Length: 356
Image (cartoon, rainbow, N blue to C red; front, side, top):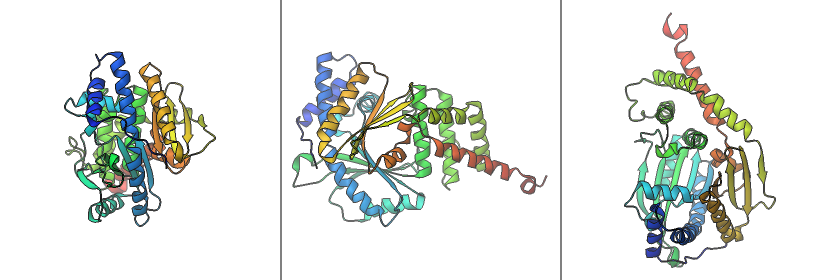
């Protein structure tokens, strides 16, 4: 497997983060800082690959149909996070390298979490966030495990932090719909940025999905009963024309261009206003080329090109589409759950259940 070697010290990485955080930084400094960011982000690929092999092995006894994907955090997302949290250092950001496991239900989520926590593992668990037991106000749910990579044989990767996200398919459908709608509203809804009516809608929907999975409601919606929550979701979905909007995105995004090379690393380029998606693929030994190409696209974004891009690794193009449906404008699972909630409301309000 190709590796990317670190070219900068952690002190230089921290300095680059401070430059990128400051919108008033000189252009030449920003250019240098982006080069540092690209290399720092790229070196996380080696430990991610190690973690992915372990994750797939664990899932064999828990959920053979689970989706597994890995990604390197997008530069705009990294810079936005640095700006939102002034005390954060780029050299200590814990989710630059991320893995995602999407399993069938809550039982499998907790089985996988306990498997990690109870097994002998050379890497150090340095953080755990249970957004299922304590969901975010935004409606987001899932389990995050933060690990510090340990490898005495490859010292220059030692100490890098990685984030493992574990979700159910329902939680995944919610999260990717938030990102898809945010793309077309041109707001980072997932970071609580954007119109209140949309932030409130997805928080409400997150609460409905939680109740549907047998969990507690999202903060702020505790006073609503289960059916009342579903009814409110349907009312707001109709008022905001949510289903028609999301389905229009999916229909328009049928034009997907695949690179003929195949490969393990994929750069996904979404052009939101053209509603097209392109995929550039790279083989296992071409990680440095993939990372360089990723940086090229991000330079285009910095220059004003209206695209979104991410570098990910999955087993196939099909699993890529399932793991990152927001990049393919695919929200059909979210829409299907809204229809299920509608049926639940009809059943609860039927004469045989109301006695009318």
